[in-house]
Length: 257
Image (cartoon, rainbow, N blue to C red; front, side, top):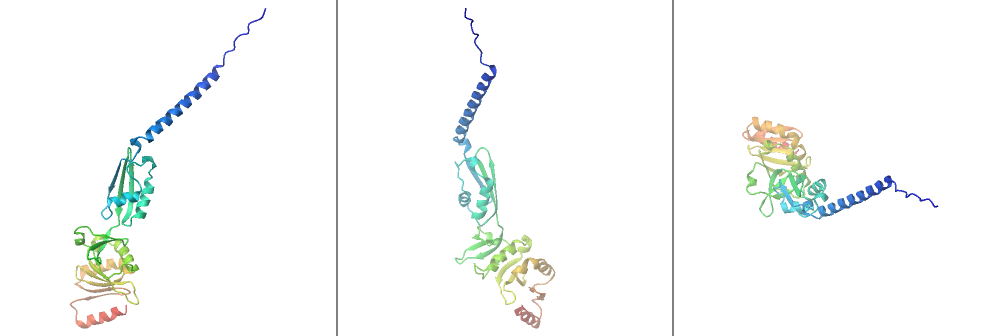
């Protein structure tokens, strides 16, 4: 008689491995499906762009410089990259901050260079000058603020650009007394300037010396009667009510500096 051969059962371990692989494939397909649905839904898009802090730069110019618009992929926007684009593309902007908040909100806050002076344009309009030398249209009634007016400067004068930087280092209180600044070059000091103050002083100094001399200038203004102050290699002060010979001697010294 022939003997019956028993049926061999498939090992349990092989079954378990097969089921695990199937579950892994199903899970992967599920994740892919969810990802496709998410990135094609409105929740993954930029819905609102808020811009704050701009006075001299229009919001439309700022948004154009960011390179992003509503409907762009939310996770595809780099805040640091947008910040770099803004400070590079728009001269009035000193700093920019981009904050993203899910879902779909992007908040852009800009800080512009401060206004340090004003200037009458060729067309007769008052322009505000920022500390980096950029000219922007002055806001309504802004020229009534306590800032000096630059007169007689050529737009491409390098001393003018340096002057705005120096003015940016001066405090608001010190800046408020400066009324008008005009170029007054000499052989010894090509960057020499003449300043008229609201306290009725006439000051001769140089752009390169302005930040260094401003404290001494304020000390004279606070303690002396209105007069002529020279702050170059040597500092001198002559009150306007002195006799004519003293004024003449001061003028002669001034022409040699």
